[in-house]
Length: 170
Image (cartoon, rainbow, N blue to C red; front, side):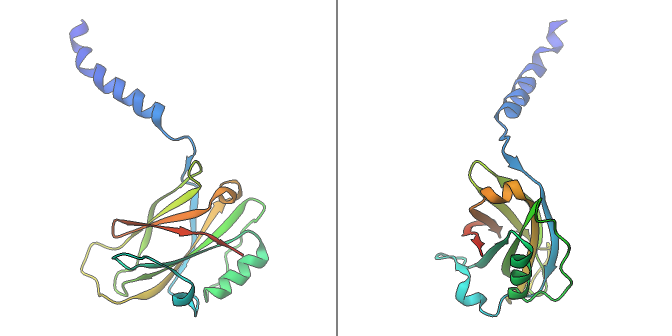
């Protein structure tokens, strides 16, 4: 009777171990509310630049109220109508990047780790040959207020390379 249980005991033990080690302060409550091919006029002057290859550039700004939201929306030169945001419950992050004109990025597998005060955002491009140009892209992400208040940095994962970018709060 016990012979059929022995082979599954290691699997059961590993499952329990993984459940017990999971980070309870990791959240995936991140909502993309807008994405446009635009960046601030002075992006190259104010963006965070990687000091080693690949030389990616990023800009991350946070808005905690309606006035900051409008100001940052205008800074990033977004043309579509601003989605409504309840700033009592949420904050908004603007993420400026450069992408291939023929292979626009999508946000995938993004998460918040409150222990480390970071939000990790994965930029994924289509699985095809892309042009080697650099065109603008801004992602606008809504995050619950409680989590957003604890965040200090964003880790942007692009081409399997992680870059830590400080969050600008106006």
